[in-house]
Amino acid sequence: MIEVQNVTKRFGIFTAIERVTFTVDKGEVLAFLGPNGAGKTTTMRILTCFIPATEGIARVAGFDCFQQPMEVKRRIGYLPETLPLYQELTVTEYLTFVGRIKGLSAPELRTSLDRVVERLALGDVRDRLIANLSRGYQQRVGLAQALLHDPPVLILDEPTVGLDPKQIIEIRELIKSLAGSHTVILSTHILPEATASCQRVVIINNGRIVAVDSPERLSARLRQSEKISVTVKAPPSDLADRFRALPGVMTVFESSEPGSFLLECKLGRDLRDDVARFVVGNGWGLLELKTVSMTLEDVFLRLTQHEEGVEDAGGAPGAGQDVQTTEHPRA
Ligand SMILES: Nc1ncnc2c1ncn2[C@@H]1O[C@H](COP(=O)(O)OP(=O)(O)O)[C@@H](O)[C@H]1O
Ligand SMILES: [Mg+2]
Image (cartoon, rainbow, N blue to C red; front, side, top):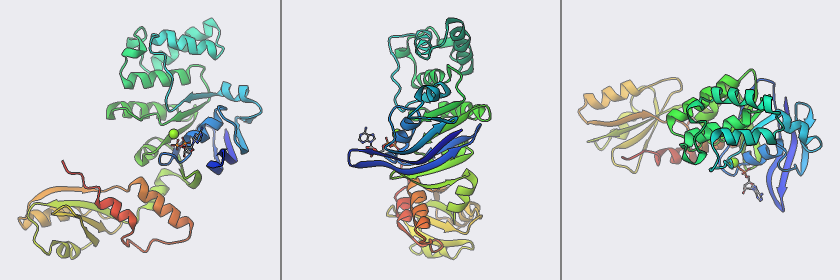
């Protein structure tokens, strides 16, 4: 449904994306995952015909984004990173305005409007001014405008940024409900976001694709160990050594925070229970215990190392580890 072949985009001498290649099948939900500045928005703007590629080919439903933009736009609903919502319009007025731009006839517009208002649960606010809506509702209005002409393809640029956890879950559920009937690309810089609602993940960093995989396989490829962060109230001076002696613990890092340790354990073993009993049983006082998930920086580090053929030597303390140890949140 979507084909991107060796697409490069240069802004002057700066290369924003380089030879980006991937495809999205009909009905698939694909995550475009990468840190800020990776080139996600640039790729999406090319696919939605807002900017032309410098080199390469982008096609949607068989139509070339550069040569047949009208055909492409007809089939795409786009939620940009920052959507210009007209604050002084009501929800109905705004969606009517968007529908006219999209070339819907009056009867088409009425049915489409009712459909998206129902789908995004906007019924209670349809006559309210957009300016007076919460961020969550404004984002739903943004999604409503993307879905208005019932396009088979949706391009959503960071759709959950700035939303609270409840709103994030609502948007994720909505995206999941689109799978199968719609082809979706959503961009995100948050790893769990990509794994929560997508069937496939394309990871982009510095304008280049570093991995394409299913969320499960990606996690399996990346997870070579389980990490536990533990904070102890009154640690004995040799606690790091004592942790190291626990069965299943491979490496122990001491944090600069007094009493905080990062334990790297054998893959597939959740030692939280053992660690908790060990600390409490010895009367040292357990202040905090949790598993630590891999940061996006770790992911890129592993993937780029992998790509260059530098194998991670089974839990060696690399730069990723330093990222982890500084991560201990202090209230
Ligand atoms: N119009 C532009 N002119 C110059 N540089 C740009 C322009 N748009 C994006 N860039 C640069 O291209 C890179 C990729 O940006 P972008 O695609 O917005 O990344 P992302 O969406 O992944 O955060 C960034 O370094 C950004 O500064
Ligand atoms: Mg962006």
